[in-house]
Length: 203
Image 1 (cartoon, rainbow, N blue to C red):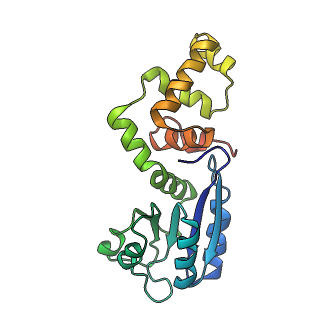
Image 2 (cartoon, rainbow, N blue to C red):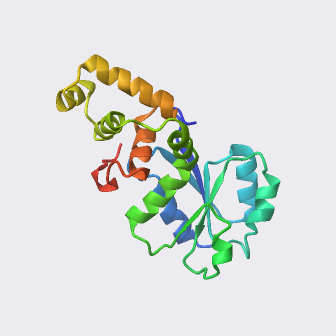
């Protein structure tokens, strides 16, 4: 679980310097997501970074450094929660892509890439919340307002509630979802289609 001060860690692994540096720049500017990103150009560098820093997501070309054997790589880090996203631009074998948590093409629209990355980050959290602690309609309304940047007073006025009630709802939302930051709520709201990604400003 990420705190307000703890950004998500990404690693980009590809043979092309232009692809690596471009994706790193994109990751650092995803709306509503605090992220740090580095790029690596060899499997050994990737292996060392994953061992030392346990990144949240590795974005990798399946043909990286010759051939990236994902199953073998994962077997070295069985205790890691790192997710793997494939850069699928030149991959046509669906069996290869099926091994990854998600995949996108470099030709995909930016919003589609953002959505897939955020889906990977939030999957476990939203599955758990949906199964046991689904938000009420009112709580979903409040999440939407928070993500749009409204204050507690503005939310109270808009939903005809007291500020105290809004604060109580927000506390309950945090407890249910185990999400403590606005960035985390933003991801939740986008993935669960409470808000369109185009409505989210950089934070």
